[in-house]
Length: 448
Image 1 (tube, helix red, strand yellow):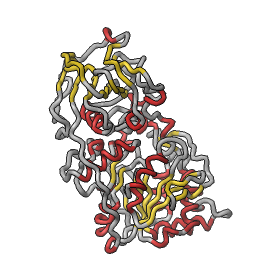
Image 2 (tube, rainbow, N blue to C red; image 1 turned 120 degrees about the vertical axis):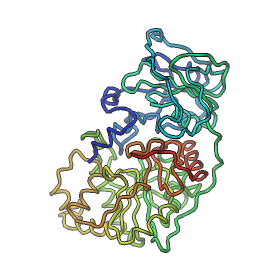
Image 3 (cartoon, rainbow, N blue to C red; image 1 turned 120 degrees about the horizontal axis):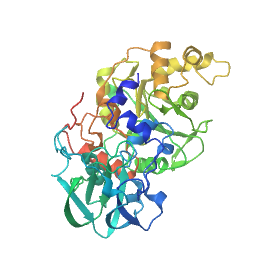
């Protein structure tokens, strides 16, 4: 169920597997090109690695290492100072391919201003950083837009990196422009102003109980606090909750619901996904025990880094009254956003009651071999195949991400009916995505 969508990824699976253990420091000593970065600890400059993805697969983590770093934490914390760009040892050995470096508007309509192809922007004194394994200059431009202090970028087609070999440099200013084959440079689109998004509409579509599972260390707490303060994401639903494995106060009236789990898991399966089925078996047990979901018509599980619009979901649900749950991808349900009727969760609750200790859905656990599954596949198969919850329509407007044929996910302008975009792991990039989504009704992606 998960294998076909990997083929659609912007970087090939073999390339990703070769890059699986790669680290992504701001000064890249393994590649041929990198900006000079001084002042500021290396760990502050590094984009998220696979260790930051406890509930998502390594495949997504790798080619998305900087995909998810759009507006990375370096910008939020001030980043590093750059003294310009230089070639690192080994650059002379780079073999730039003869074909065109990049054709703007070649894959889908470009959202970036006109690019300078085969031109390097040399960074002026000031902030600058770089990210590895960025497959296109279009994505590099979107990353620059997602960092408030970024005013220009240069994309290196082949930086000599393992796997997806391309690299993206972000910079605050430009000291000069010089011709150089294999590089693409430009400036980001004008940033749209952010406004508080509308809340869910309830009424005809039914009320929403929305929740997120938060890992206590890392970026998720700050991201959820920002969402709460701006009435964004799950906090635009009729009721919202945050689950974690320790008590954390997200806001004066929002304290995490504690689950009995380390929130740590291995990775495996065809897509090298996070094998987190048992983590969410505990989360669903806790949610059922609390019982707040019963007050609402729909239960929505949303990852903290998914830019989510409850008002759009409310409009969509008008046509799905009576559905058991709604699939978000033709390759099988994906975890960034999962949508269930309360009736479906009631059915799941009955299966928990059948287990001797009430801690797992007995029939699903005993009748499925799910050791190499993520929680999304477990829930999909448990509800549809074992518990026979029906009907299960599929709607592609529930989620836009690269692993489900949404090629331009990073621009966040797939139309005013797209319910969520994933992934955006910093406040700057999350806010920028939300502003783009609310400021445009045009569609950028040509879906397969």
